[in-house]
Length: 166
Image 1 (tube, rainbow, N blue to C red):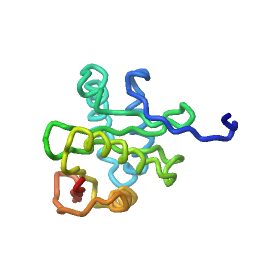
Image 2 (tube, one colour):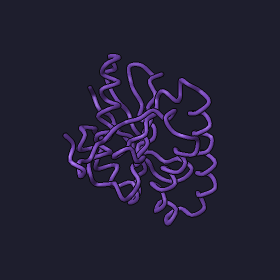
Image 3 (cartoon, helix red, strand yellow):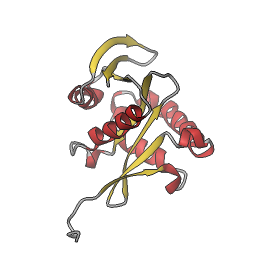
Image 4 (cartoon, rainbow, N blue to C red):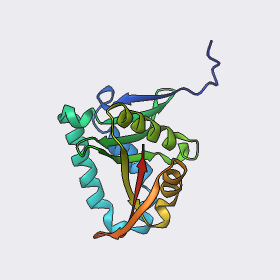
């Protein structure tokens, strides 16, 4: 019997939701990002809109993304790419701020890792920013067993690539 205070974490396919859910979670998760990079708001919103359109219109893409829910409330979004065998790629991995620091990001990584192990991948790769905003993500990847592979710069800021052998 479940106590009314029990927290139930589930990972649901995006097809369980209406279009707009991915953008809603990303906008909430990255709201503080725009404090540091306000000029990126428009570009990010357009990119997220395209990402969501592709996830909802292309079943292959949509089947490589899940929404994390607490008691059926959407609180996170994560995606992966399995086209670069034997290296699996982590795409988005975010939790809205009021649900961060509860281990949900690690649970998302665990779900992805199990999917890659099941199809016999040997490593997982992920890239995140090398900026204070991304420090929690960096720490989470390290605590999940990833090792820093390299630091590089793109058009926006420095990024860190992490790798985990599975």
